[in-house]
Length: 104
Image (tube, rainbow, N blue to C red; front, side):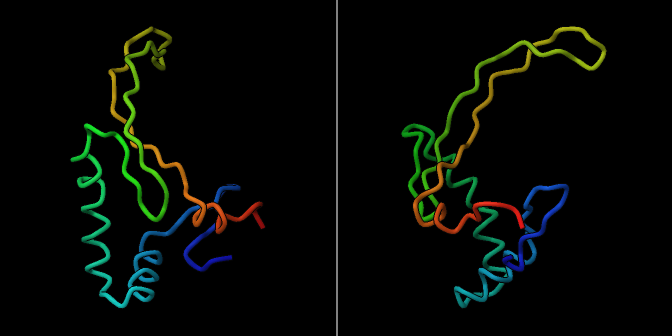
């Protein structure tokens, strides 16, 4: 298992601190620079709302609008959840090949 991944409750979770340290090690830049880039990444994705797609080495990020919908509140009443813009990742071949097929 990759050292920046842990299993918690049957799910694989990625530990941010270990991930940024590993990216810094692989790229030869400081961990602070890696954190700044990762922090800026979502803002950069949202700036290109018109095309709705951004191709990266990880895969394609797509912006989709989730329509307004009815939801049930914890007390059983109905309410409306507002429309949202969501970012979705369709993993590229490079990422899919590295994703484990099963949990250890």
